Structures are given as structure tokens and as C-alpha cells.
View 1 (cartoon, helix red, strand yellow):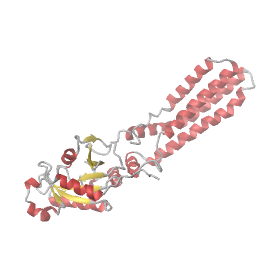
View 2 (cartoon, helix red, strand yellow):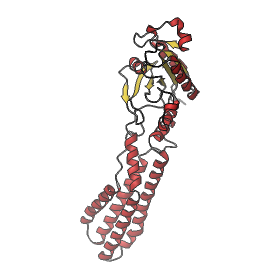
View 3 (cartoon, helix red, strand yellow):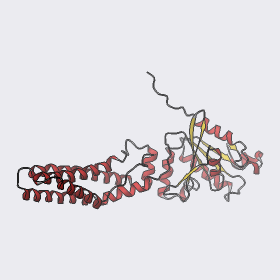
Length: 327
């Protein structure tokens, strides 16, 4: 996951302390003019390199980030503001090098006292540059903390997204069809953990995702952040399974469940969507078409037709792995 290994961003105070304390040690190892030159070079290099590393640790959102992760990130943090903050930090990195290049010649052909005076002036300007981007450094680190714990979903893997009202059996399905118990991880904009599982067909690994708090209620009930998160999932889904409960045991009438299904079909118009009636062991299959207008009926509890539903999803995705080019 592209945000997982982002390093902690130092505060302006931490960076200044680090640069100047290292510079002091470098100066003690030498004497005279050489000490002043070494102190300036050390401080400027640490500031410039650390600030540059802050920027280069982040992916280029325009070129490196998959649209899924781009929109997901933008739902959690303000990507435009983050990019501006990174730009300001890179400006400060270049400015630190310019200050070094401006003052270093002044420390070569002069007396020690004058060189010390110039070095102190350079230190003051370096500190001022870093302090100017204090807010940017704080925002970058806050963004890093918000993004680094996102679930490790592979946006390039063939993916089935399970949707539907609460208590229709979505998480039970995810857990049932995966080789191990489905992973659960939290998004900042959901009240419950995202269910994520994997299964294999013909040596291809498929992801199956349940998104409680996002696709389990009508669009009108979602806030702006949640709506944007759903837009991100549009880039992720290769097939949608909208689960309904014709028995009404979930606590929602079938009419409301089908209205949610219709809204999902409208939003995911370029994705195959199957309506799957769960709890087939508790209703009359002969009445299914009229009651639920479902493509498939199954029972996660008994296992009835679960494999049939999965096979239909796999067939609809029709995933073909990229083969290495053999010229």
C-alpha cells in the first residue's frame, strides 16, 4: 500500500535542533575557519536533505497513485492542500541550499570572528526558512498518520464488492468464502471495520470487500466524505454483489433494499451488478422473482448456491492476468 511506509515528518523545531546540534559537533572536530565552514555545510545539508526526503517519500498523486487511492486519500485529507504543503517544503529545501551557497564563500577568506558572524547570520536565515513551513510540516505529518493505516487493498487485483443493508449476511459471505477469516480494518470515515478477504480460482487471487457504513444505506444518508469514498470504490470494483434479505429478518423491507440496489446499479453503471437473495433456506424460491427480483438465491448459513454466486462473479469479471512479454 503506497502510504504504509511514509516516515514521520519532523516538526520545524525538531529539524532545527537536529541540524544545529549536528553542526555544533562538526565544528568541534575542526578549528578556525574550517570549523565555521563545516558547521554551515552540516546544518544546511541536514535541513535541505531532510526536507527533500519528506517530499520524495510521498507518491506523486498524479502519476503514481491509482485513482482508487487518489480519491480515497482525498476523502480523508485535502490532497490539494497536501500537494501545496509538499511544494512549500521543497521550496524550503532548495532555499537552504541557496543560503549555503551564498554564505560559504564568505567564510573562506576572512578572519575567524567575521566568519563566525556570517555563519550565525546563515543559521538565523536557515531557522527562519524552516519556521516558515511549520504549518506545512504539521499538516503533512497529520496526513501521513491519517493515511498510513488504510486497509491494504490492491486496486489492480480483480475485486468483488459486496453491498446491501445491514444484517443481510454480507460479512458472513466474506468470511465464508475466504480461505482464512476475513481481515477487518477501519477507514476513518466508517463506524465499522471494512471486511476484506481473498480466494483463488484457477491460480488467480480475487479480493472480496464488504464496506459497512458506505454501501449499506441510501446515497442521501451519506455525508460528503462517505460519498467520495464510494466514488473511490468505483475504481476498485470489478463486480458488485448486492445482497438482499427477502425474509425481512434484517429489519428492512424488501422494497427499501431494492431501492438501495437500484441506486448502486446507477452509480456503478460500468460494473456488473448481481442481486443476490440470501437466506434461501428461509423463503420459497418459487416466489423469489416477484419478491426480490434477484439474479441468484443462496444461503450463506447452509452453503446453498454460494459457489454458484462466486462463479458467476468470477465469470463476469473475466480477469486475464498480464503475461510477461516474450519477445
